[in-house]
Length: 203
Image 1 (cartoon, rainbow, N blue to C red):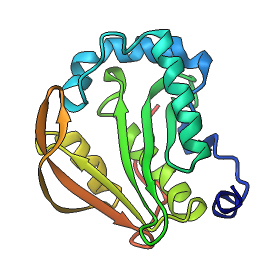
Image 2: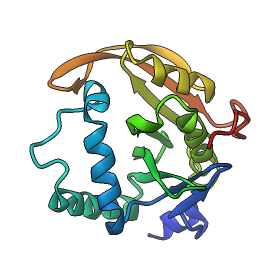
Image 3: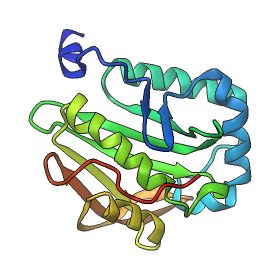
């Protein structure tokens, strides 16, 4: 645990405030908003995600997720955040740094989802920009990786606008919606560009 404290500088990692967005660790009271948003966005999300379990949106499964999230944060393995609009306090989506590798790697994987009503408005670009200083400065990571299916043009735009570089194609990389799919691999390394968000503000 001493190692984790030196990496994290005793910073409060539970929330990060951006220009228009707040990234905050998921909490039990968020369940109703989360379940409603995921349910209404199901057709929008399932082409890009692993298959949903039959009880994926249940309160019991949500509590199980929260326990797993808490353990992963304690173990410096993953840092999940919900994305909230500051003005309205609405839940918009989620963004996660996962698979944190220390030692000689000092890297992590970036993943995200955006609810259907809020897609295409620039929110995810701001969310990723808001998360990058925590990844590189606070957590002292050297490299952030991301993978996206070639057909997911919206995700590709987010990564490119956030300074990620396409590094290759991984065949049958992840099982998505019941099928193994090819993915483009993207990466961004510390010091490779500004982490300031300069995109248009959206309400």
